[in-house]
Image 1 (cartoon, rainbow, N blue to C red):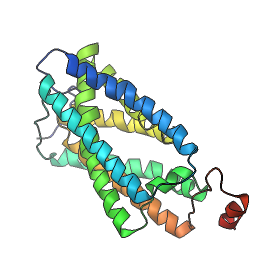
Image 2 (image 1 turned 135 degrees about the vertical axis):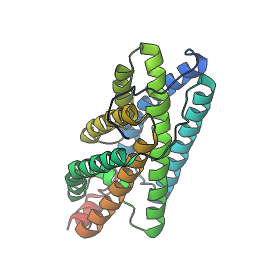
Image 3 (image 1 turned 180 degrees about the horizontal axis):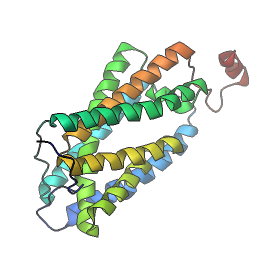
Image 4 (image 1 turned 90 degrees about the vertical axis):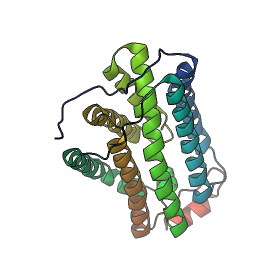
Length: 253
């Protein structure tokens, strides 16, 4: 019978922290957050907006490569990712309740971003059939690969380093939030909370499967919601630096 007793948010690890573990800690704890902060500045200075299709393909490649790196790290560091049983009914119900709560909390913010013509909304708004298909694919890839990377490998390595799995889960959640610095501060705060709750689910279920399902479903719903709001409210991305004021006025009118 399913229970809600808390275990550890870190997965079993058979070997002491070695060079490959330190590499993973540095890559996802320092390099990726720093790159995300720099990417935010580069996006703000763009003079030509990339197509959403190209953006989604690039995102999918990055997520899958990161996940593959984490799988290699898990294998070399002796981290057990093997418990892949489908969630028990009570755990699945808990996941559905959490998913509904996440969407209810963030849906007004998604709509407001569209109303305010937020530049970032453009990158989350798959309006064509092709882009919707890509968005769903990226959502699934992110759900699987990011949970392996952050809740699976990074949290476990941090627990091995710090000796405290819950402190490791908090620090991993912070790193994950900063790695999404391309988004606004409100979204980063939500991502931090989301990440820590996913670690709590790992502690309850002993598996990454439920966090993977919730993560993929949440990302998919977010993009489809942005697209719906974009169609209903007539979203147009704001002009980039160097575009004329006249063009901006035509969009607003």
